[in-house]
Image (tube, rainbow, N blue to C red; front, side, top):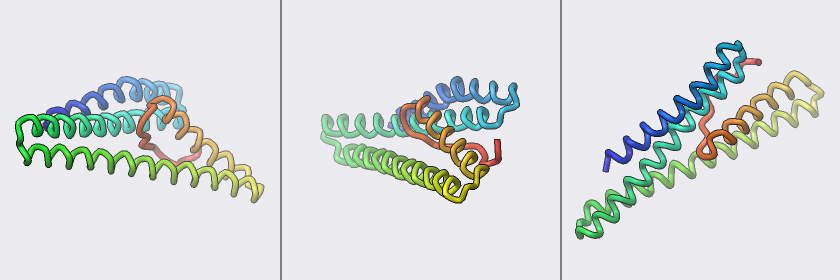
Length: 149
């Protein structure tokens, strides 16, 4: 059910465009790069969440419809989509754990080395990630630059 996959991506893009786009516009209007980056990351995260939801719905629909129609190929297709969805969720989770651990390590290293600039830059990066996670309440995909704010 490719339609469900596309619908998920479109829904994520619309939600991300409205929320993330609004945040990004505020950041651009106020000339605050960090806020602009958060908006871009919210948009990317919403699209990823929509993709995952679409894949989940598509896989479940194909598996159930295939089971009702006794269509093994459709069941197999549904299971493949569900596995792909699971891989995406696990991949995103792993990526975010690495991001959190890496950012935390950078903050600690900056503090330990008494490098205030490095610690603050790392703390800002980590704060952006936390804010995106709080806004999207789902998959997190960071966008933007590592430029100083």
